[in-house]
Amino acid sequence: MAERKMKSEQNRFTPLIFIIILAVVAYVVVQMIEWGDVQLRAEGDMYEIIVFADSTDFEVLQPVLIEALGQEIITPQPEQLFLLYREDIENLSRYRRHKNLLIVAPLDGTGSTAQYMNAALSEQVQDLIMAEEEFVINRYHSNARGQMIMYLTGPTVEHIYHNIMEHGDRLFNYFHDFALRREMEGVTRERRYAKAELSEQFLEEYQWTMFVQHDYILAINDPENNFVWVRRATPPDMERWIFVHWVEDAEAHEVTPSFIRERRDELTRKFYRTVDDKAYVRIAPEYHELEEVSFKGRYSIKTRGLWRFSDFSGGGPFINYTFYDDESGRIYMLDGSVFAPRYEKKKLVLQVQALLNTFEPAPEVDEDPIEQIVEDIDPEDV
Image (tube, rainbow, N blue to C red; front, side):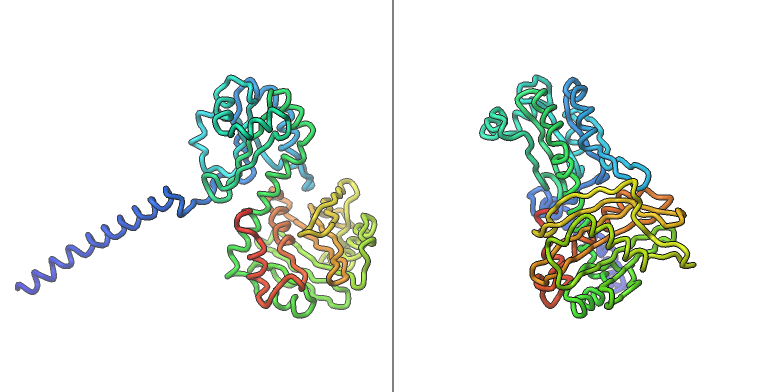
């Protein structure tokens, strides 16, 4: 009887001990977060920018802010990449961990946002702003991992207006490039599910590699034409296509807009065909935008555009990087396309762009290509 009573008492205390342990663990985690040892990830939609500005200033700046940051991409229907929502600075704590924050105020302002701006910036920074040597300060991971806070200021609201007008693309690229880095970090964080065997196969056979997510399949592997195509068709009405093509014994001067257009159309006419083989993919001439950029330190031409089937039965957006690699003497063409008739496409385009940016030529990878790709994404940048 005594023994049974003792066991009963032990059983009664076991759940209590478990609850105490959980409470202690929870307390430690909370303290670590408060002390900065653990940083929670940023929240909110990656395409929302919460703008903190005094109402009178925002009335003046809203048109140029929307023009600069609310740029449209053609997919083929226009989609505004970033959506702006104004809030009073008194509500800043509500959005403390939001992904994208924009604080806009002149230093000579008298409103609450202007007062916050003056308190947030050091005297040294304010001197640079008053001398018109600076007007934008970006801070990353301040309250959450993956957060970007942009401080946009000037001596007067008129200075801010003109700086946005003159440097709108630069401001847009700050937000867009950081969104791309977030997407790359999210992709490679799932590396245990990646198709490492494909990354290793590309390295062994072709002396380059890239990250291949688990739900992509190798659709075409054609060494004769130096062409590799991986595709993702989940769900069935949403397709993402990525191809890599390279030209041996090339010269840097061969990377031209006409080469890119002609070679891409040549490749898609051969490899991107409908099931009945009656139609093929080609570049739609209505929207075709080229930009000179740096792709991992190499001069590259980035192309954004629309593709469509030759019978006009469908189409979608694509993004292409073409560059010359000194080490291998090759021209590389990296291309990502989206076909998703019933879906918003801006996030899908960013996803394929992130995968293209994991591409690495052989001289820059070691025995484990996946880990090297992950290491090349600086955690401080995402």
